[in-house]
Amino acid sequence: MAFSITGQIKVATLKQRFLKEFGLTLRVYDGRSFADEGQTISQIRKKKGSGDLSVRKSMKVGTLEEKIESEFGIKVQIAGSDDSYLCKNELTLASAHENDQKRINKKDKKSKAVKSDSPKTDEENENIVDQTSENTLTGAQIKEFKDLEEEAEDSCDFRYLADDIAETGDKNWAKKVYMKAESKAEDSMDFASLADGIYENLEDKEWAKNSYKKAEDEADRSNHFCEIAASIYQKLEDNEWAKKLYIKAEEQVFLGEEKTNYCNDLLSVANNIYEILDDQEWAKKLYMKAESQAGDCSDFTGLANSIHENLEDKEWTKKLYIKAESKAADSEEYDNLMTDLNELGDSIFDSLGDKEWTKKVYKLAEDKGEYSGEFWCLADCIYNKLGDKEWAVKVYKKAEESADYYGEFENLAESVRENLGDKKWAELLDQKAKELEDDE
Image (cartoon, rainbow, N blue to C red; front, side, top):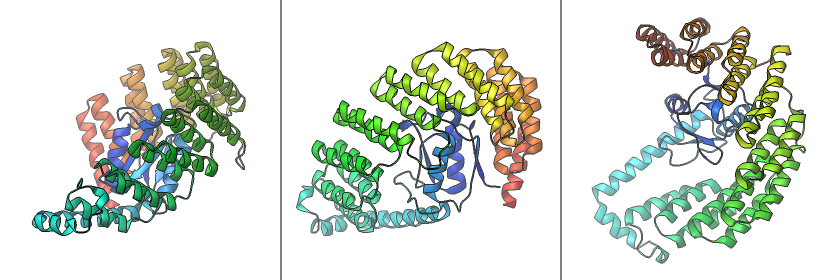
């Protein structure tokens, strides 16, 4: 069985296990900032998501990033083991790890060469340094940057190199590399990220503006328009342009092919409009439109959470939770139903503080349960939200009985140890995890 991501796993734990499993860094975002590592995936997601996603080493980097955004409603990026660069989207996780190891070995060799004969290296490189550097870099830095520039292949490679050069103070060289990044840019996010770097590091407002315009012209996804709009609003302080982009983001929601549910994309646009423009009225109109498109338990729960957080409308929030519960109770079995119910119970507790209603939803979730990860997440919530240790133990046992992957036993061991304080049971679970990991 593949590496599993569940809604209730903490960000810090997910990142640690991802690094251990794939040798790569998983950057997890909450909006445009890095996510709080103490929160769970469910707590930071902005729209409907799956409760369990299996990841294999044969999966491509870009595919996984898209799946996590689609299934969990959160943005992630996969970086090298030292978190210094982003992995190429077309590589599999296995290939990305292999390239990362080669990169590290090459870097180690360079470092040793510089340390062994640094005066000579500096002297030699003084002869090749561009006059634009104005002596802001050491010879070793110049050599490293030139090597990386020769190895760079796409816009992302050049952009990150330009960012690093700019941080050293060599704006002229950075500008030349940004120009190469621009010549390699292929899609909306290439141009948008380039514009961010140019604005932040070179303070060239006009060039950044031109790049944002190219990003707008290439954009074909609602979330891309939202990201560009946020940058334009925050960096260029162009409110009117940002509003036009959010209008395009809303329009784009309904332009996608083979879509049957638009609730989540509308919710995402509404959240962006509230967070960036602080326009409650516009956000409210989109929330109402999203409600008209909501289809299942998770749709209504996610919408209710945003309305509670942003509009503080308790009555509307409660009505949506009622609809969410009704959809789950009356529905046929579908993937992640238990997880959706689990998140509904969490939301009711956090937003309304209604323990009895939360308990009722958790019980329905338990009845719908099938997989180990689902039971483990539910048991954690029963213990942490309701403080019901006896019930939590029963559900943890169901999780153990249905577990068949070492990561599932690791999750259980951590919860049993931290929540129940049962070291003996935790050790047995750790042993099962180790045996399965060794077998794989």
